[in-house]
Image (cartoon, rainbow, N blue to C red; front, side):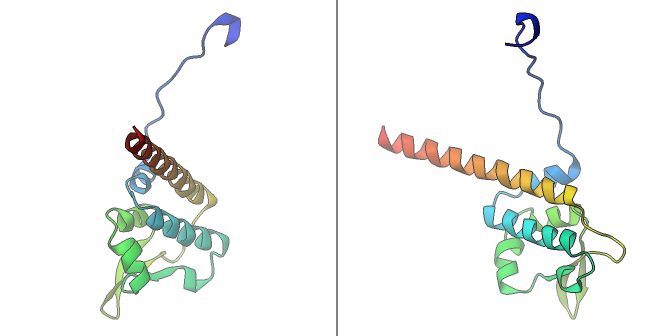
Length: 131
């Protein structure tokens, strides 16, 4: 019960920013986990060069990020830039740009929302099989 016996107002959720919308558009849990790991590593160790570059030709990265719709777009929305080095595509954090913990939290929120959606859809599919 709210103030004075009134029910609290149910406001619509705020409209997501461009970055939040780009990350929420990724529908693969593996891709969101990898995006989280890349952003987190860049935020925690901002001067470590090995965390500031990702080769998209790498087999694991290609399988998880390259083949998932919206994953590369989400990383570019987060501040990475798509470049070409040695004839292969590379995602790079530009010089002078640093990842923040706020960006990490955006990815974590998208990960949690996707996990809840997957769990709910799994629960609905299981309950329909039992009926």
